[in-house]
Length: 125
Image (cartoon, rainbow, N blue to C red; front, side, top):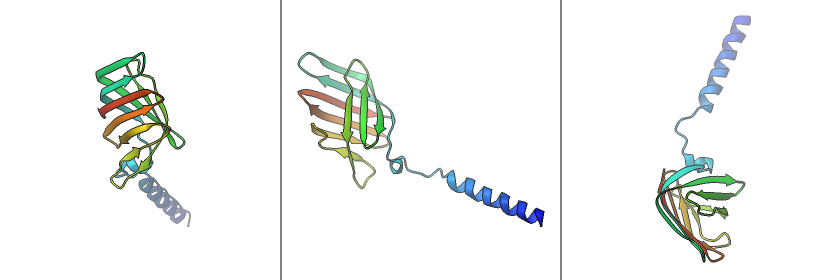
């Protein structure tokens, strides 16, 4: 009887482990695109005009908002809200600013203005 319980316990544990380790999960299903995107970035305000061909943007998500941390002295763009489209792409068309930001697992595009400042990016992972 003890051996039957041990075998059933091992089988249940194996089923649990294999089902929780799915490798075919789409990153868009996690609702989180944290990580670094590299490519062309830019920023313009009354005092600065920065353009970098080999810049980076580090993306994080806090609650329902995304934050974008730029390299090369470009100020961060924070508190951006997104809506999900059908093709695993997230798009922002507001968030206290004007413009559009699209992000998916491979591509980040930014053309966004807020309070007289403008951010741009065309980056890939």
